[in-house]
Image (cartoon, rainbow, N blue to C red; front, side, top):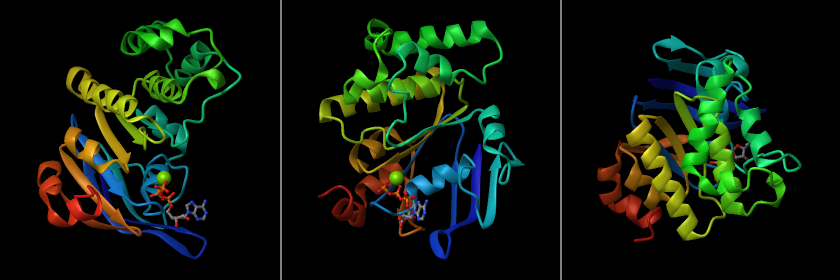
Length: 235
Ligand SMILES: Nc1ncnc2c1ncn2[C@@H]1O[C@H](COP(=O)(O)OP(=O)(O)OP(=O)(O)O)[C@@H](O)[C@H]1O
Ligand SMILES: [Mg+2]
């Protein structure tokens, strides 16, 4: 579905991604792991066209999308749920959700998406009039994911959805991503530092180290890999 080849990204003279290649297959969860500063967010930002690549290609369903503007990327159904959530704190839960549907042309589709989000996250439905800035961390993360779902994504990209959450809440988020993938057939590109959980729910995994793909394989095989276990799974 998404194919990246030899993608290089620079911030000024600093190389953030050096000729990385990766593929996200339709209907699967693919995860991208790596330490702080490895280039995970840069990869998502480049796919979303918020950061421009210096070279390489990004194909979505066989069509080159590198260089498209970011609104066009959203139109294609490539939706990023950013790191740090970036909600509108002084707007209600419901308004934050409706903003996520700004590209959905048909109002009934937006309302249908909203019902699905409320079904997935009953707490958001209970709190629909509460200001987003007063939600707990876990609730804000649910709202950020809910807002991304409002845009009818065909590829959902999440940047560290478990960051800062209590283990139990993080587990709920991972269960939810698995459910979205299995029940709604949603394709997901998941950026995580929680390698354990990400490898459990994904099929394919890539490990970034200082801007290069250091390892790639099935999530099952990487979970058994000694190097991965030592460096990323604390085993
Ligand atoms: N806007 C920017 N200007 C300059 N350098 C940047 C910019 N954004 C990121 N970088 C640098 O690029 C490298 C990769 O950053 P990136 O945010 O992609 O890492 P990451 O893997 O998402 O890390 P983290 O796990 O900490 O979120 C880092 O060295 C970072 O300092
Ligand atoms: Mg990051």
